[in-house]
Image (cartoon, rainbow, N blue to C red):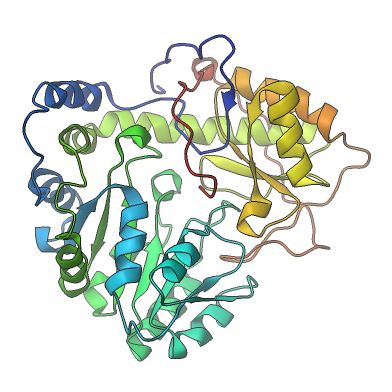
Length: 388
């Protein structure tokens, strides 16, 4: 089974394929819990975020003091930039990735060094002079994931240098079992911290809630700084998150539905002579000659929102959400108009954490997969920040 069908997008509303939103929406139990919490909006939310922190801890098998709940991953990126590691040293990340790390590091006055996106060796080597390091796994905007050897290397460097390693795991819920994650390394004593969100697979993007999990020392620092904004996570978000974590069936249906829809989208691209980077997420990075122009024309002429990965430093690719089948069909037709295929272009298979480099072989294209239950339409939601 897949997750239930949602109401159609209102007539005239843009097709939203730019923010990796879930076309399946939240668990019905999470939605009901949020509605009940809204009935009590005259009461402040719990500043300790006790219920969601305990629910996360129980699910992951860690202590509650190893969990910090916040207003989405964005707040956690900012908090980590403010307080983790040697604050007299800049942070480090790779070029061609989610720019929120750089933006937060620069805005808090630490600065950010971006190393070339050609594997993890350069990032690991940069730990020596860094105060904190960020990596996105699975990677945004390429969609790939670190292999075990690459993840091991980063954790080893974090342990050797004492530089905290912050791993953005926003898309981990979509990745296959065995994908390396911070939880695998919490027993090593290395300074590692995972950031996770309820915005993607759980479908709670509009409520803004996420969490960090790591060693109690790192999490304790986040919580200490978080005391300056004690009510950043509202009552509805806290209640919905607890209910979402308890609804294992909904999450599993979303995972299965996304995997089927993603590979069907890849196959549909191939039929039209297009490729896409390998992905374990709920989006594909699709190469086009001029990604900025394609993004602009898709919105202006066709009412379709996609994300130009050039905003991340990955020129020549569109990041396209795995949305409803009807929306993806409309996107494919429009893409043939704004960026027609002249000759099928090779698609790079990037290394772990990397942006693609030209000249490598196309990614393999699986056989088409069909599932009649996946004719879903994402609900219209408020526009998010440009760099997401």
